[in-house]
Length: 243
Image 1 (cartoon, rainbow, N blue to C red):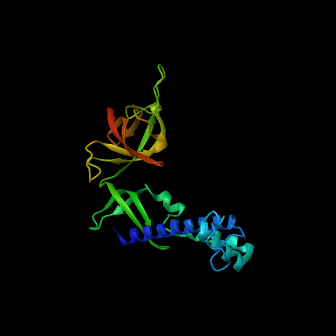
Image 2 (cartoon, helix red, strand yellow; image 1 turned 90 degrees about the horizontal axis):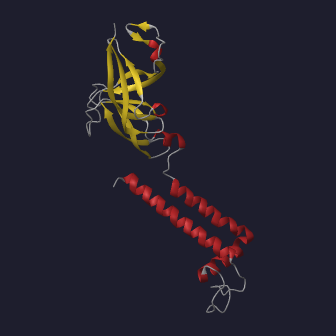
Image 3 (tube, rainbow, N blue to C red; image 1 turned 90 degrees about the vertical axis):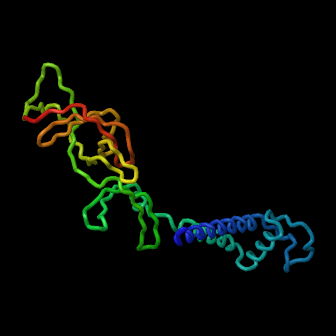
């Protein structure tokens, strides 16, 4: 177990202990009874106190009111706030939380090039230091522009450009093509793409155009999906040479 993990566990334990102390303290104050027998403050300490926290609660309440009066109610609140700080001191700020699961380009240590990875783990070590765990999903990445496919209307032909009816081209979809094999740890031998999640639907057909060919591609099963992006297998349904 790493030092940062041990430190986090200790902080969580301290936070829980402070929460418990604050709860007992507030219960003791709320159920305070001036006639309760209290160590060092009154006689008859063998009697049963009415305080919900027992003898300890009766003593704590009496001591708190003797020292601070009604301001004593602020003390357990302060302890609870400190406990909250200790318990959550390792929680990531909102912008960092959003970075979890984000796609990122990683420069290889040997300087051979960039690879595509996903942020799997984030740990805030200090105010200025963050530890990130990234898993590689592709060593080769090709930016591509896909087009939503429009169905050709019967009897209404579009303009042919290089032998292709461009009326079938819908809105653009920017994506990344991951040539097989991708995911080095568990290699995928199928062709895959990464596109915005709102553009993904299993079975949806899109068009991919290259300098030489026009492909009709069907989106297949998901490999992984996040709020912002979806990584899915693709299947080439049709291929036409560009004239």
